[in-house]
Length: 447
Image 1 (tube, rainbow, N blue to C red):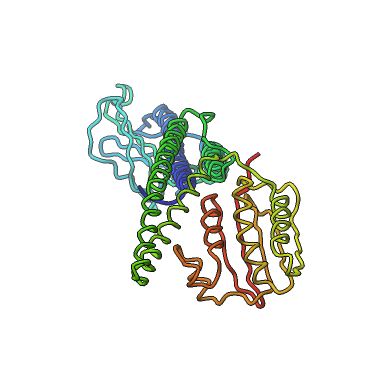
Image 2 (cartoon, rainbow, N blue to C red):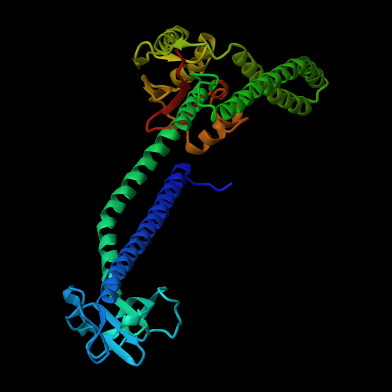
C-alpha cells in the first residue's frame, strides 16, 4: 500500500471533488442560462415577426409593402442589432437597420406557416440569430408566397450570459470555500477515532493500559479487535517463551555444577590451563543462565509491581554506608518523593545496590544521586568523583557478555544493566572528569 498521510489524501480528494463539482455546476448553470436567454430571444423574435407580417399590405401599384413597421427603434437605427427582411416573388424589403446589407437566408423550402431558426452572418462581421417564416398571402394581397425573417445580434445574448457568469462567480467561490471547509471538518471529525486508537496504543506501550478496547465506532472495532487479539496472542507467546527460558536455565544449572566439579578434578590432575578454560566457559554459561532466570523472575512478578524510588535510594545508601564504614564518603541525594517506578523492591535494590556499591568503591570523597521524572520514565543519575573509566573500556563493559576482568569493573554493573533492560528501561555509562556517571531510566508505575 502507498505511504503518506491519510488525512492529506482525504483533504485532497475532498478539495478536488468539490472543485470539479462546482466547475461543472458553474459551466452547467451558464449553459442553462444561455439556453434560457436564447429561448426568450426566440420568443421576442416571434412577436416581432408576427407584427411585421400583420403590417404587410399592397399599395396602389400592386407592390407589397409594410404598412405599420414595429415600433422598436433598433429597426430604424443602422446596424442597431434588430433587423427584418421580407422576400416576395422578385421583391425584397429590409429594415433600415440593415442599411445596404441583405440577410443571406438559406435556400430551404418551408411549408405555409412553418418557422426555422438560423445562425447567420450579419453586418459588420456580426453573428445573428434569425427566425424566418414562410406564409401564403391571402387573395386580397395577391395570394403569392412570402418569406419573412427577423434577426437579432447574437453578441447581445453572449454578453448577457457572460454577465450572468460574472455575477455567479463570487457565489461559486463562496460555496467552494464553504464545501472545502466542511470537508476539512468532516475529515478531522471522522478521523478522530483513529487518534483515539493511537493514544490508546501509546498507553499500552507505556504500560498504562493492556487493551485497546471496543469503545469505538463500528468501522474501527474490527481493527481494535484484531489488535487486542494480537496482544493476547503475543502475551501467550511471551509467557511460553519465558517458561521455556526458565526451564532451560534451570535445566542447565545442574550440568554446569557438574562441569565445574570436573574442572576441579582436572585441576587436581595438574592440568591447570585446561581447568581454567573449562571454568571460564562454565562461568560465561552461568552468567547467561542467571540472566535468563532473572528475566523469568521479574516477569513472574507482573506489571503491577511498583516501588517508591526515593525510599529505595535512601535504604540502599544506608546499606552501602554500613558495608564500607572505613571510607568517608559524602552522599548527596536529590530525589522527589512519591516517584513510583515499575519495579519490585528486590529488583530496585539489586540495581541500585550494584551501582552505588561500585560508586562507593571508586569515589574519593563524594557520590551525587539525582532522580527526576521525565514523561513516562524516572531518570536516576549516579555520579562519583573517582578516576572514572576510559571510553573504550566503557564500550567493552556495556557490550553484552562483557567480562569483569576485561573492564576492571565489577560484574554488578552488567547485572544491573540486564535487570534494567528486563524492566523496560536502560542503563548508560558516561565518562566525566572526574568520575563516572551511571544514568538509569526506569518506567513509571501505572496508577
